[in-house]
Image 1 (spheres, rainbow, N blue to C red):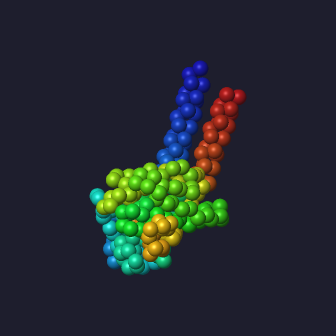
Image 2: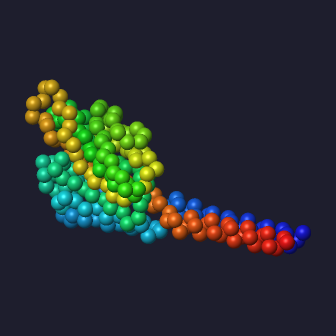
Image 3: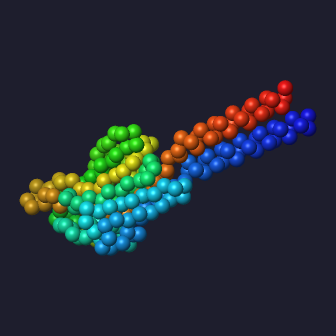
Length: 239
């Protein structure tokens, strides 16, 4: 009985360590902050625990912009300095596939604030399975927006008002599909009937993204192999 208990305890302990190690790796998150980008540069890189890295490249040099206490990053030139305009891009590439947990953008307004359009942010996402898709976020009101991806956008701070944050948080925006890269740009907005010169004025800033690196196949295989070995050892000891 004593040997059996000892073996069972070792088996449980070993499995616990394997599961804990696997879970810790699987739940590791990384955050990219627009406030960490450097003005005047056109490339920014950061690394997360577990060996995953992210590199963001602008179509031209970066320019950060702060409004109502929220800082994001855009492009230094273009129609609106410090924001991502229609003819500008910000491309994020990951060394290993990731799942987007959250995505936050700022200064996306619904029109009246600056005699502008209902601005539209555009996201071209390249997935690890080889597919790609384009998603759109459109500001429709002070605290309302439409989103073509998963979930619903959440207004942050003062919202889409004159001098406000115009900030939107997207939770799990692309579902549980693994992402290789993402391209931020803007799409022509919807102008009000009273505004005859409000086309092509969509622009916004990248504020932050939280991603979860997808565990490599070897990690899952290691857990499965470990369980098989411990199970085989247990059977051998009993017989």
